[in-house]
Image 1 (cartoon, rainbow, N blue to C red):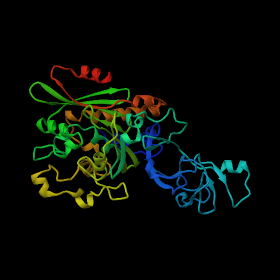
Image 2: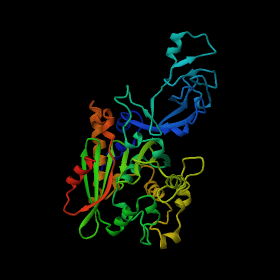
Image 3: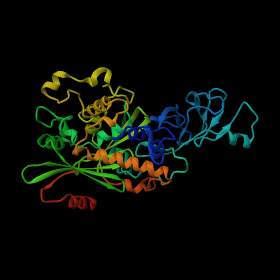
Image 4: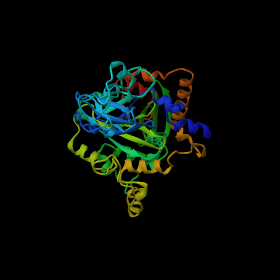
Length: 420
């Protein structure tokens, strides 16, 4: 990849090709749980390089405004959330969730003056435990994505997020890299252990038995459909078939009947992102054991600093790596699969220089993802908005991990799954 293309892919400020493309889509801005009560304290939010403030008004609606009052540029986060608006602490100017100025108590202002004193506000929707924001230049072309986890009851899903100190794209690429599982998450003792508790034992077993997957990758309406095929004994293959939804959503393969998984990587700025991590079951409530495991850093989750969305493992403490464990039990010595991913992706630097890579065949999904994003950004410059942004229903559909006889072609498997 050329250095200039890497710049295009990774810089997300307003007015950049990728920044403008991302603004065509609804993106997670925060978790609903971060604004737990009407008229409660506001929240600082940085999204796509813009400093913002979020608040839940008297009626429960979420506002997402420019961080600074347009009067004297005081920070609105310091203000009072009261009476269906956020009131600046400096002079009392008050703004509703649409960014309209509804009161200037220090001046005798009529309706026409108030109308001119509004501030930037972005549309929000709450869906699936997430507050989604649309930051595009005009009205959103459609409603929020109809992802499967958004369409189940709250007790059937668990939604969390975790800070990653790296560019969004290298975080995303880690989630569509289906050869790294053979090593990064490997258990040297040869068992599947805690992975079985979370329905991941089969993935670990076949990844260790066959470390060289055959990768298939097709461009489809929603982005990419990715398949990794591994040996599953003499007569069968183990398939992991994933979905990348443009621009930043990955639905991760799981076996039928298991808890489903999705990852969303949302740029804070060029060098940091939020990793939204969702677990849901299509047919039942999540068990207490499952939820406790997600909350407290079991096999599949990084443990967080209590009361925050910051991982306990960081570069400063070597991601809690235990070198004795690395020699005897764990390939990395890093305690959870999520923290292992986080460590590797942060280790590439704040913005990974793709011009220095040496890629191989199993990197096909990563190459196709980059090409798709570059093409979509180029089309937007020409005036062609991404079609997917106008089709929320196209985000439906789960990803599968299944075993099938060797004589069953991938096309037949896809047809079978599409009819479920």
